[in-house]
Image 1 (tube, rainbow, N blue to C red):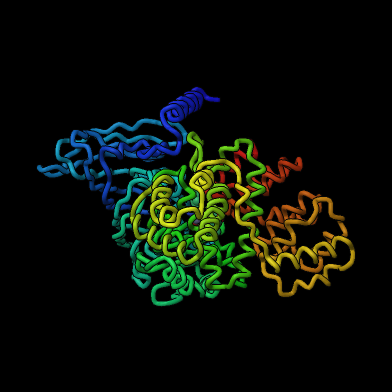
Image 2: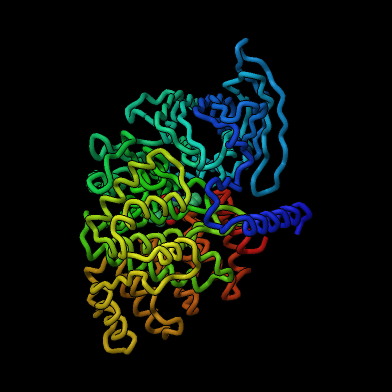
Length: 622
Ligand code: BES
Ligand code: ZN
């Protein structure tokens, strides 16, 4: 361990000890975000105005950010911002006498957090303007060469700010506890279109200069930008898709039910408050399935399966327009307030739009993932909804726990209080905390006041607190069962017993979920003839469905079915979505194929996002 890292971790151990000694962990009402340098208890950013040139030749953004400030503590004479690998050229402040240059210090805070930017604020200063440029290795941006796009003609650039990467392209208070509005002017090569998580006219002329307004206050992790050779296709008056031309029509078709989902979510939880809702299909190197950037969800193309079987991701990112974007976790330890609520809302919307059977299948798959994840933890604290202090990166906390355990907790409450009361409660919760950033304890108090106290005896407060703060999964957790899956289990058993062959599975009408359920529970020591039978019958090794391919590759590698080797290589080079590739690299290490994994990675790495590169470097111990 480096000296710096050692100091940091010693510091967090001490910090943790102090916190643990002073208060029960759940009682920190004014808990500060440990992943920001910002002095946001003294001064907050209320508006950001960006003026940036997108320089593809140098892979940098260059320009300025003007920040409007609200001083909370009168004597504040410094503004501390988060940055990471930004070159700061000059800083100006605006006070009564106009703009003037001011002093600043950039200080390295280690790998994890980046550099703090401390700016001198003269008395009465209400604005600062920072002239800066990003670095080509900015952790929150990916720059693709024309060859790395489908069209091969133009370069592409996109951001991924969550959790703490906004600071690598904007000097900002990079904490979900602070919200601001923003405006931007972005200059690009003339043929390209710039998009942001903001108000935009889909039919704006492509002329290389684009203006944006984001009138609703959002936290920094929801700032987003993308620039490329993008086309637009409307799905309805207020919903549409942006994509490279090759996939535009397919995307619009795949996601044609988005307006229905919006209606269903708004019927349940109150009006959609963000104006338009558009989808942006990114190149396959996008490291996530989806990202809920307000007004403009970012999506991996790997969910375009051709049969609408992976559209729950739209329900998910759309649901964030209520849970997460409207009511936000104030610090990343409480990410379940974003992701657990969103997983719950997602599933309710899937039920509304596609019916109970599909919704329940998704619940069963989710709970199975959760149990496997919890079983794999060395540190039990990782299985509590509220994450421990001192993680190396907030992203480490985004496991199945905040998503699936959070979902189970809310479903438990729904079952206990009844759907009608719980729906009314959740709707009121979104209204009460709209455009606010909250902690788990705020949720608990609101739940206590509005559901537990008016309905005494329905749940025990200790059980509710255990759901939120204790490790593991309570016995009272809901236990979804799916008839469709029961049939798949029976079919699988008959296949494994040699009673039926692959052609006799009766799988013609299976949807992706059933295939995943079928494949995931095949035994690791299944006979090679059976692998071959399945593969020759269904072409699983070369399926275009990225989720089914993933499940099949994981199983085949474990079992030593080597026909998948070439397809896996091709897959790892083509796709950069973390959920689909990190486990494959890990599996290759686990089955003593690290050398082969390294060879593939050498070819694939240049195409991966910086976030994915860092993660796989760690898996392969580079
Ligand atoms: N907000 C997350 C993505 C995220 C989380 C990015 C943490 C960076 C840090 C997004 O809403 C999400 O959960 N995406 C999932 C898909 C979803 C259907 C579970 C993903 O990308 O796999
Ligand atoms: Zn999410």
